[in-house]
Image 1: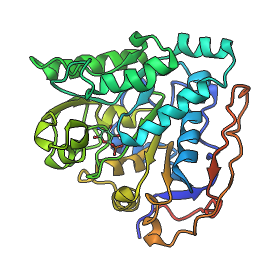
Image 2: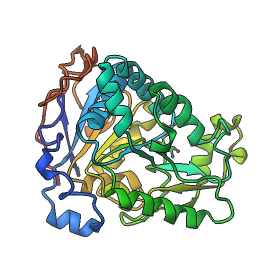
Image 3: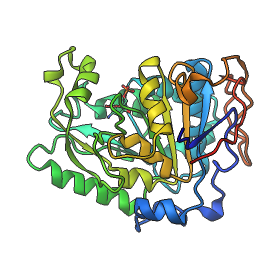
Image 4: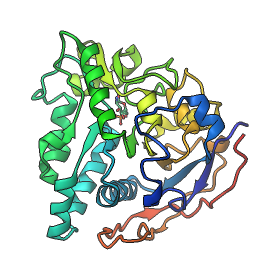
Length: 336
Ligand code: GLP
């Protein structure tokens, strides 16, 4: 079976980025093609950390985001919306309270984030818009300056293609994403990169698939017809150019697509599978979402207290209180 991942209980040692590497390995104004990445990079298999419970998972992911903002603020943080991320943002707001006033102030002053996507045709104030979601889940609870929380302009109905180009240029001017948070669509999309999607697809306006409009109908009263037909999304080009990828997957409904994304060779039919080409990709999943990996033969769930996310200069590290799954040992499985 094709495998391009390893299961680990710990943050991989290649995950933190030494300051010296900043801005020279990934991202930047020069965007490498997927082929260049596959051939020229010191590519590690995707690492997967499995959690026994989703509350512990959300805490751990939030701590990674917080640490990224405190230690690697040179590059913007890439953010995602969706139900998977709701507990993550709640945990982030809780953890902010564990910081010292000086750290909170620094975090707010240096915050810069770019969201993956936005529906076309929804006003920012529309509660169904991703902009409104970020305001209520992130900007307001964390006390952030809204100017530092960037999203594509979903109101640009006259020319959403130009709005996408403008968003891409705005991001490129920063040097590109540092840490990119990703959710997973049931059809394998990341952001709104619907299949089929090549690894070089740029930020653009896309037509949403019936499957995605169905998946996201809940926020629109349950009727897929009420879900906007178009969205602006960062492309796989910008996503794969990020320094690090953090894919978060929860729930049994995602088990099959996650297994395919990590165990099948990368393919346009499954946009999330392109993360296998990235040199620093970490997947965080709960037991239900990880259930079909390795043919469902991965070890049974058991819990233990998670160690705090380690690393130099982490005085602000929140006490995670998370519980990770120790049943999964760091396993060096073949990658191809
Ligand atoms: C949505 C969004 C993604 C999101 C993904 C998963 O359609 N475009 O940014 O991460 O699909 O959504 P959910 O977490 O609600 O399952």
